[in-house]
Each structure stands twice: as structure tokens, then as C-alpha cells.
Length: 188
Image (tube, rainbow, N blue to C red):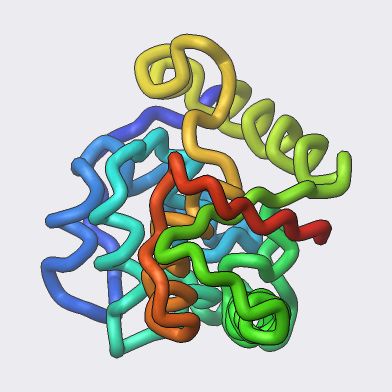
């Protein structure tokens, strides 16, 4: 039997933050995804959030790291997110920023703007599909409303850019822009 999405009171580390970011009907789905092992940013992706600011706000929350969910007792410490394999979590995200920054600094590019393009293993897409099937099976009405095309609208690559591109830009003293002629290819 499919779970019904309803307004459920959740214990979240930052009072009111989740209410500002996620609608009441998305909270149960968000909680289930974090219980499965999704990081906060991936749970937000699978809730169908497409705006950039909620990702930044949720990641920048000082009361918990991006790799932590609502119910900490359900998640084994040190395990990466089941969706992004830690790409959106410290220390992996910090390591990616550092590697890109070092490579760009070494090459001494003079372009004031840059873009980052990621190549991800097929397993990322298989994981995303598997989690979408979970949401579709357990929350069918929610899935039809929030994923009408049947795909996650914000992928791992986009979520990474939403949250970390400005940190990379600051580190290399350049401006991130989607249409920049300087494109940095990163193979994960």
C-alpha cells in the first residue's frame, strides 16, 4: 500500500528552516529519503525542488552538515549519500573544489569566467532511477505532481554547481558563468 503524503511534524536541527524550504506535502518524502541514506541536498532534489536558493540555504545551515538527514539514528556515520555517493557532501565536495582549483591555477588561465562540466559514471543515473522508482511506488500521487516527466529535474551536476560553484569561483578568483568560454571538464 502506498504511503499517503501528509503534513507530519518532523524534528529538524534548525527550527523553521525546513518549513521555509520544503512545502508541508514534501516533508514526508524528504524524511523517507534521508532515512534511506540520501544527503539533505539529494533529498531536496528528489522532492522536485528546482530553485537554486533552497540548496544553498540547506547546505549552508551551520547546525548540521549536508550529509546529515533529519533522523540521525537511521544513518550510519561515515556512509556517503546513496544518491550522489558523497559528491554533495564534505569532504568529497571540498576535495573536488581543491582539485579543480589546483588544476586551473597551475594552467594559469586568463579568462575571467569559467564553467564546470562533470562526467559521471552510469551508476549515478541508475541510483537516481532507483530512488525515483522508490518515490513513485511509495508516493504515487506525489510523484505524478512533482515529477510529471518522470525524471529528477535537478541532477547531481546541477546541485553541485548550485552550491559549490561560487566557492570554487572565490578560490580561483574567477566568475562562474554557464556560458563561459573556459569550460573545465571533471571526470568523477
